[in-house]
Length: 109
Image 1: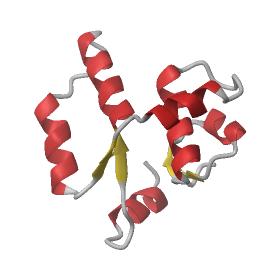
Image 2: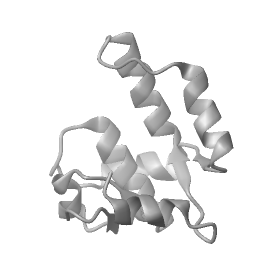
Image 3: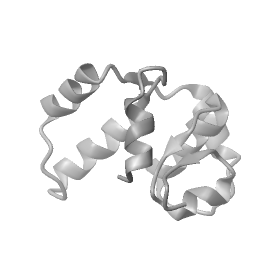
Image 4: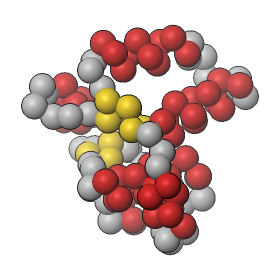
């Protein structure tokens, strides 16, 4: 993660949300053996950094249905829908996310 993004996340005046979508994607990747990331570590990281959970709401699902198909990854598309619907800044290094017009935080963008 670029230093500028890391700095913004650590500023105490910024509220940082971590989507349930991210937890879901980590769980799926763990089950497939693509990553090793103990479930407890995720919860500890959220608590230690005072990150707020962002649940998946019906409004996010409905917003997802209105997105153009710039991207085929369902997890990323749902993150875009959440960011757009809730007017949040999305932290991502995926250049395809910019096609959706959501605000992105990543110095490489």
